[in-house]
Length: 137
Image (tube, rainbow, N blue to C red; front, side, top):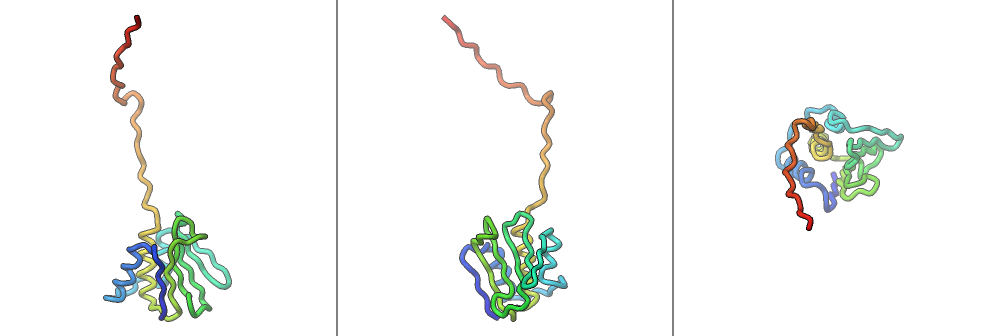
């Protein structure tokens, strides 16, 4: 297995890889992309590759089934068409490492649920402080 991690890769993703090397976790998902699918990432298939993209488009995970080098690629940044970071794995990467990485990616790149803010009705807003009146001479 060959791997490349570029500078700027989010720390939680690097930790997921390091954690796996120290103590591999059993893979619960049937496919490496399952954590992404569960997090609402969209999938696009092409004859040469399959790509899953985060809902906020800040990260993507790509699988090129017929490639030997760079078979699995995680990448992201402000715009995935110009990635600021990337993680690449060759064809020999352990399945459970990919599951652990995609689970970390789902946490890092998926937006948290929206928090709804309630606004007070105008009648319940506090009155503005009284302004002193200027004297004219």
